[in-house]
Length: 424
Image (cartoon, rainbow, N blue to C red; front, side, top):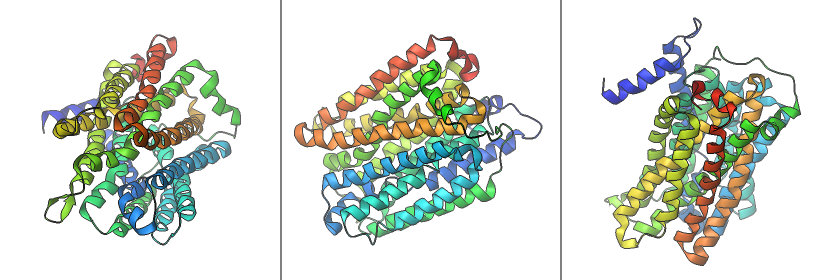
């Protein structure tokens, strides 16, 4: 066993509460399956971004049209999470069942990108895909929350790492199927089908799963009325302002930086491969940030991650093009830090929210975050066209600045003692 692997396992073993009904083997088996299911289930998220050039050529779309396809997914996700939160489905319906239904629905709608022949229809299809994804991401977090009490930050970090890989997987598919854009759509849809099936068939509810509660819309308002949750929400919104706009446009930036050329013969497109590398860096960083948060606190880790990612956002677009290797390194660091804190915000909500309404509050917060992303995803291409990539990416740093202030404020409050086993 390598030293790194030993550290991970040691952290995980110390993290679990080890009730008699769920030993460490069951917990980590569940963690692996949920992570893989999330990776597969969320593979349809950026499917149209990965094939944007093909859609522009085949369906007559422009760059702003592609932006609206991404925004449609984000708004659809918000719609889905709001419906789930208002109806309390996240706490009334078994989370694994909700994940299964939603992943299948997202995969089916994603397939409709192929025959859709006009922008309004494509936007509708992508909106529907996003709506179903609202029943994939939050329920997966709720399932893991039922299996992990201590060590939840590490577990959700693993899942967010899988989400990151899933979001970047269309770029990997695009790098392989260089000229066959339909294969990217079909491949990502079948991954979603497999993810939903795995979650329903191979996972069971954990020992820390809270019993279902009666529908109480006011439970969502605790995000605003309880200061610990409110500061966590502000930090999360700052993080989200940056994250999805970066993910949506880093592929286009890589094409601008290195062009469209293969690595080997006529296969493995360089820009798509580098873009997937950015997502892969985030997938590695997420569980590592979870381990660190269990040791030094969630507020510290989220603040550190946002300072670093905000710094990369301010820098990357202003570096001279002739320093392409350095820019790629900066992009990898940005890819790691921009998502490293994501799971820690979600974990903080599960620690601060009433257990019986954990799913509803988590879903509502997630919906608010994704609503904000529509603005930053729209803004980046507008600024890029007017001023270039430097200003476009630098504008994303405003989110981490606000988010860091909120988390440092939370660190000084008594509520912080409920985070990361009292580490804040």
